[in-house]
Length: 178
Image 1: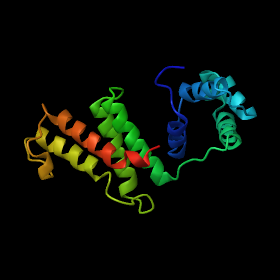
Image 2: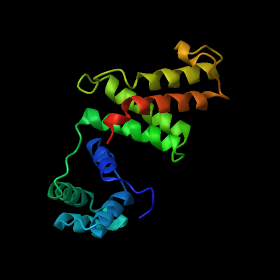
Image 3: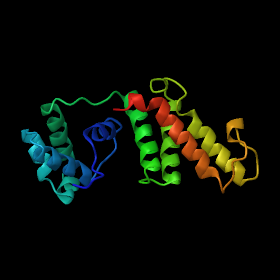
Image 4: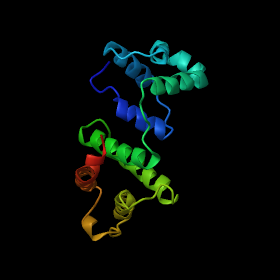
């Protein structure tokens, strides 16, 4: 397994959000077995190849779900999963594993997912990604930003603004992220 292997928490967040994961799920199961964790369905998950997983996706999902139950793991609720995922994206960007554009696109998608569903919107923590994305677009069209905090943003310095917001987001919400 690589140094950047998916953690159990990350895996649970992705599952809670309905993300389809590839080889990293199989690698996660193998790593847990190496660490001495044991369950029948964990061994099944570890035994899949990516090709067999993709050909038998429903069976794989059942085995994964049963492995999670056998290990007595709990999926985060959907609101916590979105918050954790946003922290994961900010961390991945700040640690150089994700481009600014990819991170911002995914963070903006979180805003879209949570903003229009009253069951998912519990505060305004994702609004900054809407305002930043729109301010970047406006600056490219030679208009001013939506918020004064983004005054002076342009194509050349947009990444510095994004970095500042990613750091601030982690500082404020990372304590929630386990």
